[in-house]
Image (cartoon, rainbow, N blue to C red; front, side, top):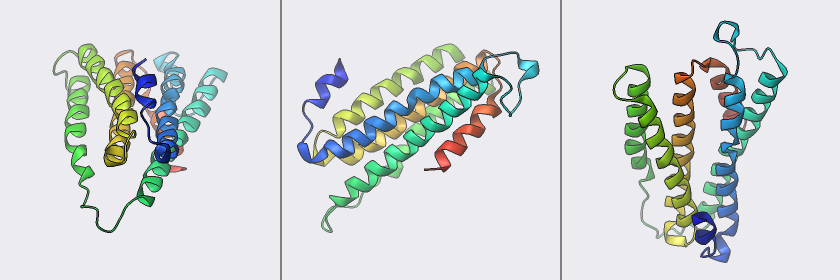
Length: 188
């Protein structure tokens, strides 16, 4: 409901970048592919899919990561078309610091046993949803459109990290979907 309300305020010139970011956020279907890849016994898990469900999960994850990487790249390129020589310098790479701290905290909870992993993964999942909705809201006007693109990237990263943490709690074989994620994201 919040996303629906946010989209109504988008300036007509920003519909294409908005659709590219929305497409990237929709790439969160990678979560379903990741869960399919994680399904099964740990002792038979390998990097090569060994069942029809694992193959479908691998294909879904690759295609979803293409959507994610491509959507954010296309949106960034379109927003660069609106850039004027007189615009002030952007420092969006600084958004990576709090994002790295949040994902690092999740990693510490997962692999070092610091804190409650379930609670931490849930909080990161909520941060993911908030960032994705804020991304769409940010793309509603020209002054905040680039910030919206960066928030979308952070939201998707948080969602994927949260899912990975949940899967590691269930004993999933992580290398399989890491491999297809790199393949899909690098192919864009």
